[in-house]
Length: 132
Image (cartoon, rainbow, N blue to C red; front, side, top):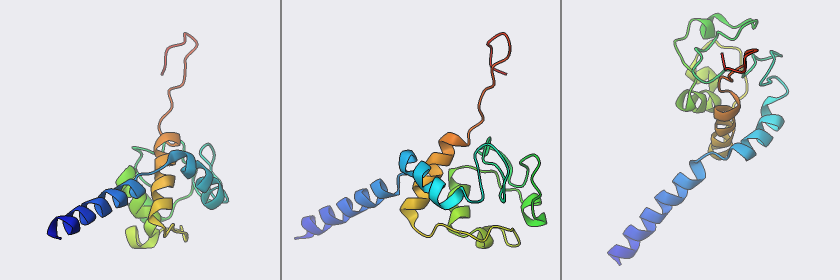
């Protein structure tokens, strides 16, 4: 009986972890549904562009007018900070402008997985074919 309970608990933990792992393909679809009204990977809109997001300090995308709260934050965007941000932007950085959150943990994980791919710095080839 004790072994069955422990095995059941272990399987539940493994299943929860598997669900929490993000699916970037689904995240791309969710990004289009939930985020694209305000954001784009390539250009600023109502919200800032997500191009080069990963590893960038919050509040520093070129050409976007950020709230003082975001400009003055020390947050650097990575998997953990994006997950925290999407679960409640105002709780994470009080005074920022984003009013939207992603309450479902799996949807958050999927969107973050997509942003980890799409929001990475892209090497730009020079005329010689070498990346910059």
